[in-house]
Image (cartoon, rainbow, N blue to C red):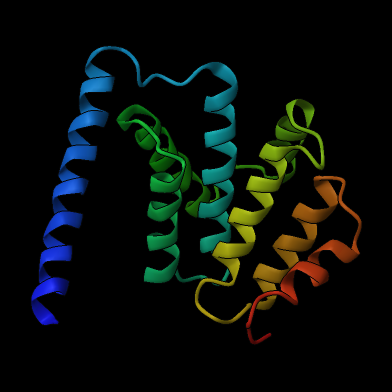
Length: 166
């Protein structure tokens, strides 16, 4: 039994290396540069994730791991990952205007659109990633909910799906 787990881990490691090589080759061939809208989506999502991660004054390993996981889930190129990491850092350093970023986002992707749902989901996942919801994280999510043009009840309805302490 332990051997199959060990073998599975080796294959996961190989897949990761192959994925990294694929991303690097894509960037070298110029295939990894996101278009203007995709860049804006990446900047807003990861900037707000950085802001949310630092809302309770401490960026946990759960939060940073989730940011990396979302980069993997969305299959970001190396160039897009660099943009995402820079945006995350700006958010953590509070070098963003949350309201202005959300207005920029909603201008291109209104409430209910697939990108708006991805943004909201990413922020909720991040806010609840450590199993608790700090009051500052909750207040940030209230602002995000309002600025995305979602009904006020959306936040509490979605939070009910997570097992978090408030």
